[in-house]
Length: 313
Image (cartoon, rainbow, N blue to C red; front, top):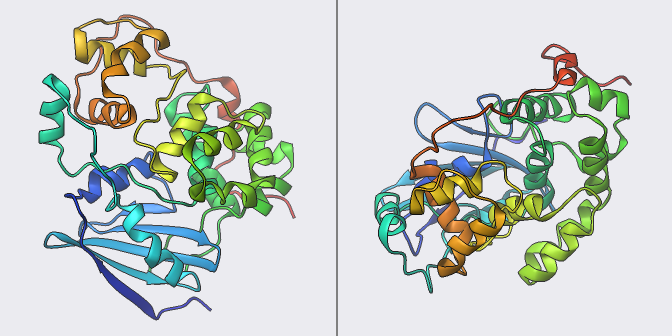
């Protein structure tokens, strides 16, 4: 029976928090079943905590953030909610100039979150490896539908897939979800180490990155993508990104093409906050003019079964 009794708390952030900008970092596409913004502007997120499943509703209350939680993991979820919305984010050493300073003024509520639910935050970056965004988002939603369970509370969201279920899913079922061998293997490897991954928020960031990259299939790009939202790493740079180098170069210097070496060179003045600068440019910067073909979707993605698919028993 789903728990209907909720607990609440009020968060008073040290810095302004824009829930749309900050919590929007956790969701891709329109079909995510674990994180969603409702028509009233409140955000809902489900999670598996060390104390059990939980559902959070987060909404504005003046300058504060009101949080309501349901489920056995309510206490853990409420305790971690300030980190989730970036209420403890710090700008020490961040002294932007030029366009970056303008974007920081224009987007003052963009915070670097620290969700602490590492495996949940890791699934989407793994699915986004070497495919188009739409492919990855569709596969993510399909995986949630296939392995998700009803979340506690009044929402119709699902709990994120249990790592044990992810590890046990056969390879042919992954392919039916549009997730080919290498990404499926990486998901399974991460799921088998989920308990160790949940220790990362208590570790120093260099050691946390090292443990992440020790998993086969997780490199600098995936490590940075998850550390920026799960560990609050404001300096994480997604090396190997298809678009990021040119986006940064175009916005900072008008250069339409750049590689990772140029990306790191341009971000060096922002050391300590390079990931924050990337977020500002991605959310508020100018798009690079398109002069070549986009990354194409691959044929296996069309093998995905129709909505409502469930794995074979």
